[in-house]
Image 1 (tube, rainbow, N blue to C red):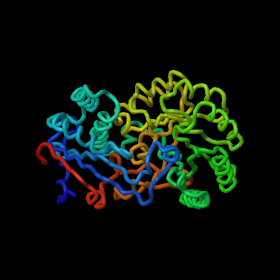
Image 2: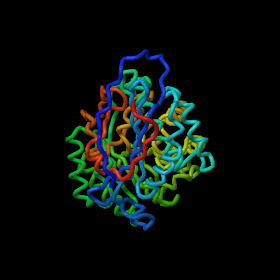
Image 3: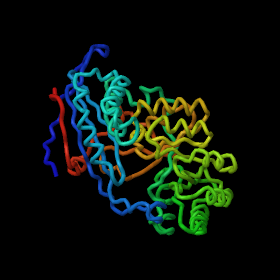
Image 4: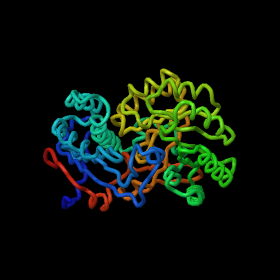
Length: 393
């Protein structure tokens, strides 16, 4: 455990928005968020993974010579958190002295700093935290919420809850969780499927649909559990439930299988959350393998590559439903031209002082500049390692 003293940063001084500025200081924080209950999905039931008990997060805090600040984060579920922190620590010094507005050039510089480990996966997920912090800083400097800086199409986004429907949760509790989510103003419900016996999935799905009624948007997520034959069979059996989508029915890299499934079923196929680059998403889109694209900004390298993917998805008229990290994805979804979804997870809420406002099935865009969140005292207490570069103004 690293003991830290937190000092309030000096307020940013008024400055010409066009005046040159430089990154003077940054801090990396490795934070381990404990989960109240071990989390299980289909991959746990088949022995591929162990129940998830914590989330590892990499936070980046930046400050410039003129006193502007930004914060961003990436994350890892199960293994990988220490690796992200280690890679970020290696490349952190490369940001000192850079103009924080040159986000695209900085992203490329950081990628090539660690080019031998590739342009996807752990390396770019570490870069994502820097990239997101730079976009947060840029929006704060402009005095705008990030979505407004990007060019928002709406001030709220449809939202659905996932955290109440995992496979470790008994069906009766899933029903209670669904009621609580809808009472809180959340617009849709997603439940996990992928039991070894597909009949258990259908029974669970039947119970949820009967409980919430026919008018509430309902999704299912198989977490890559099925083979092609099983996905076809269960996908057809699920048609009667009028699902918004079936998520990750097959291995994340099985573009041809997803394409065949999307062509054969009336229910839309959603996938993409496990992919770690724009190039991997392009392969899905090229094959027509998804009806709904589900990128994760921290996983694909940050907001800079996310915007490239969003433009590609719009060109193909694909709905967008970013995965996890609603604190970031709310802004990116609000700036997407086609009506999107954002995923409500309450797991990360203890890390932040702010809460997302939800009303009438939609998550409201915060009016605070930037991403609109600050780290809580609990996040500081869960910090297990830090690294600083440069000198704080």
